[in-house]
Image (cartoon, rainbow, N blue to C red; front, side):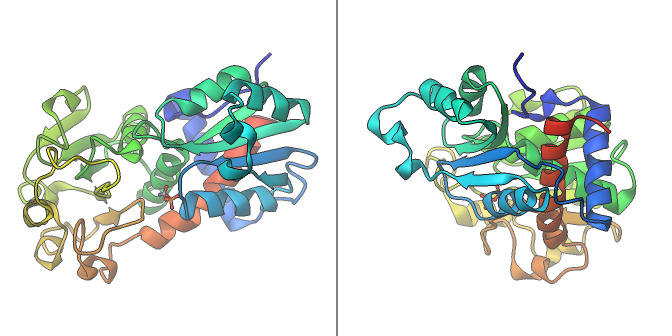
Length: 301
Ligand code: CP
């Protein structure tokens, strides 16, 4: 029987998402025993740059006592033409139990999971999904408000190319939040409207009603000039700056998955504001990733 993987948040029920958040909260309060994943070998296979996800997975894996191998793509035999299917068989034959992978191709972790007998964790594939980022975002909201249900959450900017946005929408809807996607039609097409998901064009007209404002990175590496002609025009309409910060409700928080583009999605005023929760998001990344590893390998306690 194939082991359970986390390829996107629809792999988890609402109850399981809540369980992972509770477990992560417990790990934040009290670090887990270092033998939680004793004798479990994890391979980190990242084909795209990463600071937050890679490092926090490496820290989480060490804290739960896994044996960790970092396999840089340039050092793997994929570069010599070995297929991903044969790589998966090879790693499984060595006793590897978990592969954490990031890849520029949407769907890559699904192909890997089809061939691998252990657990695959998607650490970001193309513009498709980034489930552990969404979990740490949900945990940041949950820690702040004690609930997700009923929260008014805006995702602002480049939703079209954002794997973070896609996974967040799944998790937020699953837990009963009211989601609003805000941006120009080229980055937030009307077709993204769905049950529980509004699409709006004006940030100014919607900011004051939000409990959570999640800014999304303008993805220069994936974006075409036909989609976004001018960063100045974008910033005029969608940048969070001092004037727009003043429109936020006093209790509202501001999130960004990072890395952020200063002077594009936000100005330095945001980094100094009381509602900015970026550091908490990053810190929760370690706790959530410990909880995901524990959940997949050991199941629910
Ligand atoms: N948020 C995020 O995925 O950051 P990295 O690309 O640095 O991992």
